[in-house]
Amino acid sequence: MIDTSQWTRENLAWAAGFLDGEGSFTVEASKNPIKSIRITCGQNHPELLYRLQRVFGCGTVRKQTTRDFYIWRISQRHLVFFIGQSVYEWMSIKRKAEIDKQHMVYVSAPERRNYKW
Image (tube, rainbow, N blue to C red; front, side, top):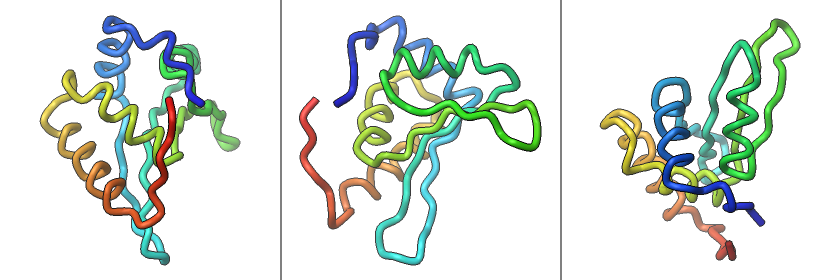
């Protein structure tokens, strides 16, 4: 279950602006018929990534092993979909197009489940 207690309009707008500038909403092809979708954001210092994690109540922050660079990532399909929809109204045209692609992958996935928030 995801903690949405920090999902204020102000926090979501901040997260949207940060992800619009620094993040990526990707769809990756795979060998099986289900494509993977994820949201990632990288920074040299992890403080803002931990703020993203607190705002959304999910995601992982990891330090790359080869250099001082941190990445916040969400790859669970239902969370990617839910978060993409929550920040959509504040995103640029480019990011909205990426979120739309993720949405199409999510709704067409044969193993889609119903999650309770």
